[in-house]
Image 1 (cartoon, rainbow, N blue to C red):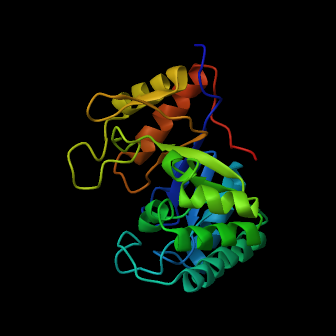
Image 2 (image 1 turned 180 degrees about the vertical axis):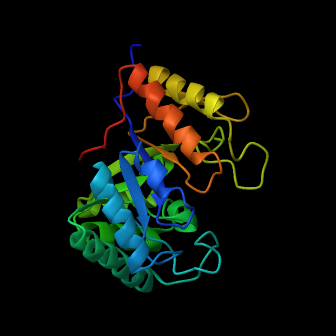
Image 3 (image 1 turned 180 degrees about the horizontal axis):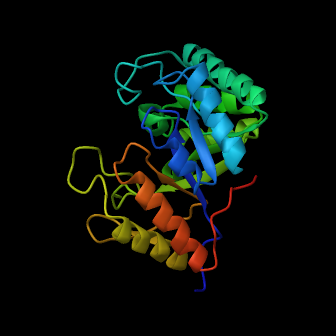
Length: 255
């Protein structure tokens, strides 16, 4: 294989009560740990960080809107300054728990509705970038949020925050580069074989096929598998094995 992309990081959202954390940690290179906004508490954060340390997996903060009722997936009315205060508290809690388990927090990836909104909302983009700058963490987000002119990309440039592009193994893509909204046809993928073939194609060509058949450039450094997908462990294992067999074993991204 002559890859168009470098070796990829393999990440998943953990500490969310799926019961899959231990199995996923065996094959992941990065773990996005929920830190109290949509779910999680001190015990789950410490458990996830301990597992990450045991398996040599990088830990990332996975804060969200303060919305445990909707698992952080609902639009939330909150001011930029208040959001920054809430997010900083979540990240600080994880940093403290990680330190107790002897591991550093290496990056920040927002969760759910916040993940998508920071690409277009200047106030919320400034909030997440401000927290990333405060804790000296790179931000992991989808390419549309990192495009020149996007609210988040502008804020990150102003604050000197490093940005890392992320793709999704188990989500469908629109021709625009966005994800197929949850609940619409093609939103979620479940077949580990099909998913692995798609990611190997991405590594080889730098493109992914959108739901309408369009070939979409997707220059990413990390690939996410959602831990709440029932097939998450099988998907992650097959991906890791296939990438390793292709001579590109997953490895954590660096700045």
